[in-house]
Image (tube, rainbow, N blue to C red; front, side):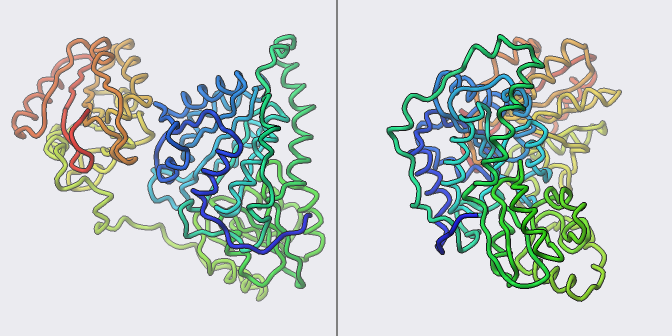
Length: 505
């Protein structure tokens, strides 16, 4: 362990902007969505929005191969989509450093599901760094790029805190200004090494595991993100991410781990040996705790002492008191119910698509919505949507209903991944009515402009129908009923303006 200076955490957005500048990150690409949308300005004016996360990752791989450092900024659910190229890149190798910067929506507040992206570390065999507060984003990125170029593979930096403030992180740690990259050393970044093709697929993986994994373990043990506070007492706390800021305020010995994968095994082993009991504080799942359960007296989410998902400041002290008393944790809190007063989680009162939702509900057929605005139509009013899964999924989901149903899909969702479902529907001669909500913006992620898909849509479904909103309910019902009566794939493009973000295109 290294020595550390006491400091106040710097703002995460400012630290990110400075790090990307100092580290000379040439390609900055992102896909918006909570909680990363507010971080996009830190990427700078040269940043570009990608159609989806897989595309963003592939563009970054191209930049890396040509000797340019790159960053891919996505929310946690976006890692699912980019995991295909992410899983292939390590054994195939890269060139210049490539970092996937992930914002986890622990709670979740603006996502359809909670997920722990740390699992992609062992799955894809890449390093996962986890700064415990926004002020540590600079050294986290500095270490991530250095390690990425050393192992010739992407690295992931995972955040569970708010960049813009509110989650300052531990009030001790390496000073943000203690290390800056020497720009003279940044030049001459590596490019893709074609000698990798001299090996078989098995050989490439053998080489990566033999060379990269030991370097990852060494980097984890030596990371400046590992923070240690000695102290007396039977109970020690191991923390990562946002909960480390809570743990730093508790009066217990503390080890904050800066790598989620690989974990700093030697540091953890030494810390565990010095304490009779260990409380593991992390979000949102017991990723570290599950790996330490074989050690004996390990407490956390699996034992019921800490809540799954998002933690609050008092949770650690309550858990410590329970452990000290030997009492069993009480029953888990009942599932949270939807509060009808949360108007932002329902269709906006002035939405021009509200009559269309109502008309769809009147069809009395199964309806698939999307992770865009239409997911808000699952509740009354209008109660039009029956099921909703991932962004761009509604077309393919509706194709599986067994009868002709409706897919509601936004234009951003269609561009993101819905086109694949539409192509498959036409190719497989499915019975489905696809209603495209065409307002020209990604309304759920901040109003970013989306591409005009009209030429592609007409090439796929030449007989598509259009309707401009607002329109009378009778007109909408007549159009939808006619399309429902036709066999095969029907496509209705409903054009309207989002009251929040202006007219389309």
